[in-house]
Image 1 (cartoon, rainbow, N blue to C red):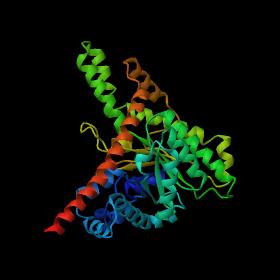
Image 2: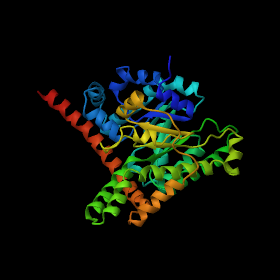
Image 3: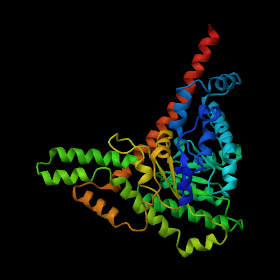
Image 4: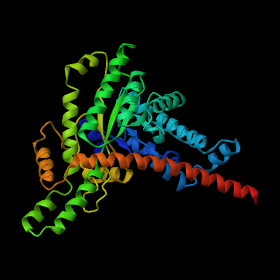
Length: 380
């Protein structure tokens, strides 16, 4: 039987994870079906859980039971998400074992309301790690100043981490350095570092969305047709160029002697994970951010419709390498037009943290609304 494009991509060296989780996906058997097609992991976030809970009745029965036990909205959220993550981790356990811990992971976001509080983030991550009690779960921590402290500390305690909301090269570099510091500390406690894994989630499509809007505004104001053509030609290129620099930096960091010493004790590299890879601009290919970001020793986490399109018509071909000349040329060209991608990344990080906080608040509100409906029914 011919291998699927996802399986071919895995053989090439890039894992494919799904950027979604829900009761419907689990109970319908669709998740197991996707695993049979080559899917090797799942990521989640508050926005995903909010959509799953608010837009379906899949969780109503459990919410009714937990409310009946006197649990408030946060504890209900905690029970619902932990149960989903545990069940999903169990479904992926054969993948985890077959790949010897490379894949088969499920990621859960630590309460984003704690993102600016490193000590509280560490405490909450340790609580979740203990409650989840699954080797193939990664806890998601934002790559911020406070997050780097938490990432280092949690890695030093042998807890696998998905460092998230990475946009810039500087952010990525600090994330990888925090991971390595954590491994160094862990190596002083245990002899085998192979069980502690991490990915660095680099957000992609949002960069093109912002840059393309700026390019379009400049193009409309530009009277010189040659310059208008230059501006239009730069559309859809910023995100991949930014990723190319990050990938090259990853290759460089994890080939240093500093990491090679840790590798002798079983340490694994922190793989870059390309996140937010669903295409937002309908003018672009639906699999743009899969085909443009194929690279060894990485992960691509995508929405289900993107993966379906890749299964139907995708082709596996290396897209990223250590050669970053073209990427540097694109970013330099953008800079000539006053477009600073690093500055855009900084704003996207701030916006991303606020978005996740708002999504978490919305998620709790959705549960409270369900509780209110239960109360209304009981009062009738």
